[in-house]
Amino acid sequence: MSLMPGEEGEFDISFPEDFADPNEAGKTRHMTIGVVELRRRELPALDDEFAQSFQGGEFESLAQLRERIATDLREDARGRAERAYRDALLDQVVEANTIDAPRSMVDSYLEYMVGGGQERGGKQPQRTPEQEERFSQFREMMRPQAETAIRRMLVVETLADREGLRATSDDLDQRVEALAQQHGRQPGDVWLELEKSGQLQQLESQITEDKVLEWLRQQNTAG
Image (cartoon, rainbow, N blue to C red; front, side, top):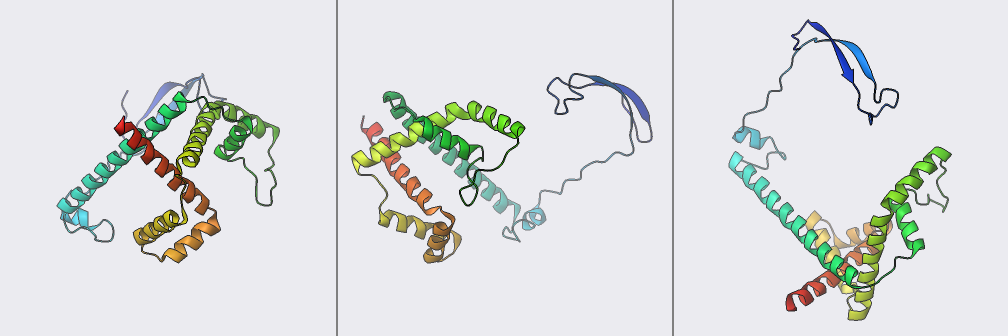
């Protein structure tokens, strides 16, 4: 049945078993539905004026906007391909080596993943029994992914130590300078911000992982 504005109709609506509202899940309701008005979205014309409305007038023409979109899509595709290749390299090494993920490390990682880490001051967040039950179920569901992440981290740490691939202070300085240049800021300001937010150590770990992955890439190419 189709309705026009001002018309009403009666319908039986069945809610699925997994409906968000448990009081309605799996039930069928008889409803009366009326149409007040019909609306149609009017899309702007794809022309130079449309392009000039983006990014504060950064683009002078539709051709420039299309070129930027195409470039962004290519960069995104390259990034996804690079991440997939890096993941595959690490997975190969993990599968080839028997590395156990310590339960304590996995549990700590799970707490971080589900947002259940310690609050400021070292206190654990207070949860109701129902919240704790949901956290517990989610943690167990995510445990295999956490174990894989920990095993990969241990592989990176082992190779970094064995092959002398840990990030140096020069590596860190260069990465901070690159970030500063990218965002048009002073390296010292970026360094202080990263240090204050606790992200400097994360950046150092990322550089180490990059160096390990580049070493693995070279080994894989040589083989």
